[in-house]
Amino acid sequence: MLFKAFEVAESSEKEYKSALVTKSEDDLPPGEVLIKVQYSSLNYKDALSAIGNKGVTRNYPHTPGIDAAGTVEKSADPHFNRGDKVIVTGYDLGMNTSGGFAEYIRVPASWPVHLPEGLSRKRSMMFGTAGLTAALSVYNLKKQGITPPNGKIIVTGASGGVGSLAVAILSHLGFHVTAVTGKEDAVDLLLDLGAKEVIPRAAIDDHSGKPFLKAQYAAAIDTVGGNILATVLKSLNYGGVATCCGLVSSPELHTTIYPFILKGIRLIGIDSVLCDHHLRKEIWEHLATDWRPAKMDKIVSVCTLDTIQEHLDSMLKGQLTGRYIVKISS
Ligand SMILES: NC(=O)c1ccc[n+]([C@@H]2O[C@H](COP(=O)([O-])OP(=O)(O)OC[C@H]3O[C@@H](n4cnc5c(N)ncnc54)[C@H](OP(=O)(O)O)[C@@H]3O)[C@@H](O)[C@H]2O)c1
Image (cartoon, rainbow, N blue to C red):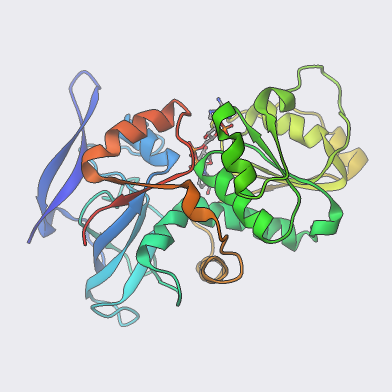
């Protein structure tokens, strides 16, 4: 069996170039479940993998794609049968295991989740890792007792994949959302997704050196890290909760201990990659039912294997808005 794949190759000068190539089943890594991929999606990590970031992908040639939704073609594990519709996100998919930017993947049986009732493969990729991460962030805020009457929730990197879905899910659940964006042209979209107000990134990038700023937010979903997360921590109400998942601004966090010891602020790390399998299923069930935002179609664009590279380039420049899904096969 031959199939199409988007592949990134490394030259002897350490330059990374992508191309559409033909592969065979024998090229796939070992694993119990062979899946025909119908949809994948674009995530920041894919963009890093495509430029040779060794923290993401060590060996090339390599097919990125940390998300895949498709149909089981063959399974050596009794939990999966031919024809089952499944989602695979995270674990090592697309990092050092050939990923979802190809018509087939082969993965260990511990990675796929059955597609929940009421969710199509296409819609599952509208969420993808970004949606799972946004929903895990919301789950953790709720687990810490944050409810709509507690006050405003601030979401950073709001026009990105994780951020826009966090805005949409929180708004759908009745929270008052303040969206932070660096893009003037994303304001209308964010309001349309349910944000009550949108503020420019510069407004939450404090360099005053003060340990606290005006307390305005009950909680935060931060997707960018760096000084923006540090500013968010200074702007939370007493007992506020912040989740952090991303580092597009910076992986560094320069802060003081004061928000934690004088205001009881809690900072929670989010990891959707190795997140517990039962929790993962629970979150997908929520995304298929009560947490499914009505307006998410507005933030989704579709691309194909031929146009992935240009969108990954835009993603690295912080220019993409919303979610891009990749139609891989029918
Ligand atoms: N921990 C996990 O399990 C997990 C899972 C998924 C993603 N992530 C991480 O979460 C982050 C967001 O992922 P994503 O898929 O949403 O990426 P994305 O679609 O590229 O969105 C990132 C957004 O961050 C903002 N941004 C870009 N450059 C920035 C800068 N220099 N300073 C401040 N903000 C900037 C932009 O939004 P605005 O213009 O609206 O500000 C951009 O749209 C990435 O670091 C990703 O690796 C982590």
